[in-house]
Image 1 (spheres, rainbow, N blue to C red):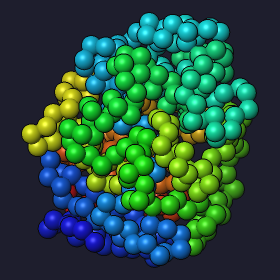
Image 2: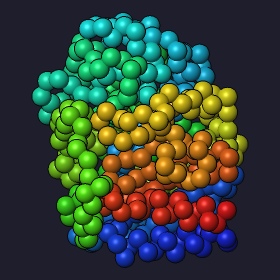
Image 3: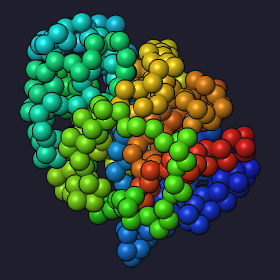
Length: 379
C-alpha cells in the first residue's frame, strides 16, 4: 500500500520481497530533495497477523530514537543554550561526582563518557523513574577514562542527554522534541506516546519468533561478546513484548529507546536534515548547526560494548560500512531489531524504515540495507 513516484519501482519491488523472508509488518519512506518519492507500508501489526498494518501504524523504534534526541541537542546549540565543547558540569553540577568533571558535552553525546551502564542491578521498572536513573548515573564513577575510547550507551544515553534538555530548556524532552521538531514538521514521531495514540501501535515480535532463523555465523564471523556488553545491554533485559509493548513503557520518557513512529515520521525529519534543515516552508535548524552536530568524534575505533567499529558524531552515527548508502557523510541512527533513519545531504535523501518483526540480522544483509541499496540504484 502507498505511493511510489516514477523511477523508484525497484524500491517497491524490494519492499515486497521482504515478505519472502521474515517481515510481518513494516513501512518505508524516502524524501528526495524535499519531495516524498516513496511512502509504502504493508503486512500486519501483530504476531497473529490479525490486524493489517495501516498508513498511520506506529511502532517502537528503539535506538532510532537517539538520532532525533541528538537533533534536539543541536537545536539547543543553535539557540545558544549549550556548547558541545563545554563541560557537562557547566549545566549539571551534580554530574561531576566520582571524577566525571572533565567530561564534555561532545564526549557524552558520542558515547565516550564511560557511563554505558549502571553498576547496581536494575529492573525495567527503574527505567520509568527519571530522577532515580539520572541520580544513579550522576553519582557513579565512569567505567573507563572518559574521552579515551567509546562504548555504546544503549539505554543510559537517553537519561544523560535528556537531563541536559530538561535543565537547559525548562521542559521535558517529550515537550521540547514535540514543540521544536515533530509539530513544526508534522512528523509522526513521539518520545513518550500519548495514550490516545495507543490504538495505532503495532506489537513487537521478538527475534525468537521470526518465521526464519538466520544462517549460523561461520567461525571467522564469531567473536567474543565484550565484557561491557552485559552491563550496557543486559541490565535490565528488556523483553520486546512484555516490556516494550506495555502501557508504562509507551508512556514513559526513555529517550534512548522508546520513540514510537512510522517510516514517514522518521523520513520527514531526516528529509529536512538532508536539505540543510528545511522541508517545504518549515526550517527547524540551520545547515551550519547540522555540520556542528555531525562533526566526527569517534572514528576507526572498536566500540567497547559492541565489539565493532562505529563512526560517531555528536549523537548521530556517521555512515559506517556504507550502511547509509555510498556517501561517507550521511548520518542517522539505527534501532535494535532493524529500524533506521538517516539523512544524506549530498543527494538530498532522507530515509525511514520501521517494522515490528525484530531480528538480529547478522550475518544476513539487513532489510533496511536492501531497501537503501535499492533507493541508490534509483537515483
